[in-house]
Structures are given as structure tokens and as C-alpha cells.
Length: 112
Image (cartoon, rainbow, N blue to C red):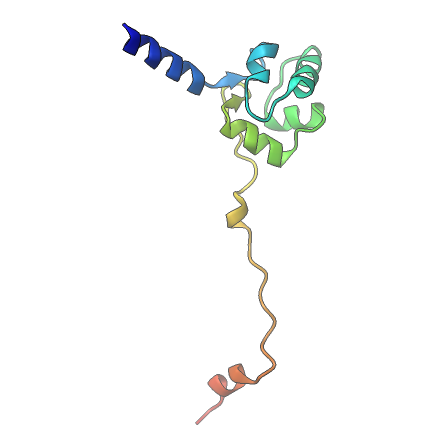
């Protein structure tokens, strides 16, 4: 009996929280959402349900791509959809390094 209850609690903690249906307490329970942000979300939601992540980000101050990615990773959804807007930071294109001044690259390209 205890094992079943433990599994239900664990499942509930990993369940997605839809921003259009969540209570203040459910939003506040997510890591990254404090009382101020949950209040802003609920106030914006009074104007109408959020259509998608861009709609949420445009209407709620403090929720941009980085915050949306973090909140989505914590289980927040908009109409059941996770945030998929920004690429992971590791996927950013690395800046190319300027050529070395020691002439090493010229030697490699020189004809014999």
C-alpha cells in the first residue's frame, strides 16, 4: 500500500503543469516560479488562455526564451506543449579563431 502511494506521489511530482489550468499553488510549486511570477501568469491568463509559448512570453513579464526553456524543463506546458523555441546553449555556433601570426598555416599550405 505504501509503495503504491509513493509511486503516485512520484508520478504527480513529474506530471506536467499546464499554464492555462494550473492553480497559483501548482505554479508556485515549480522551480523557477515564485509568488510574483505565478501572480503575473494568473493575471495575464484572466485576459484569455495562452495560445502557445510565444503568447505566454509576450504577455508575462520576465518570461523570455531562457526562462521558458527552464520552466518547460521543470514541467510547465502551454496547451500540453513543451517549449521548443531556443536551441541548447551548446548548439551555438562557436566563433572562429583568427589565424595564428606565426605563419604555421602558411607552411602547411605551401607547395613543395
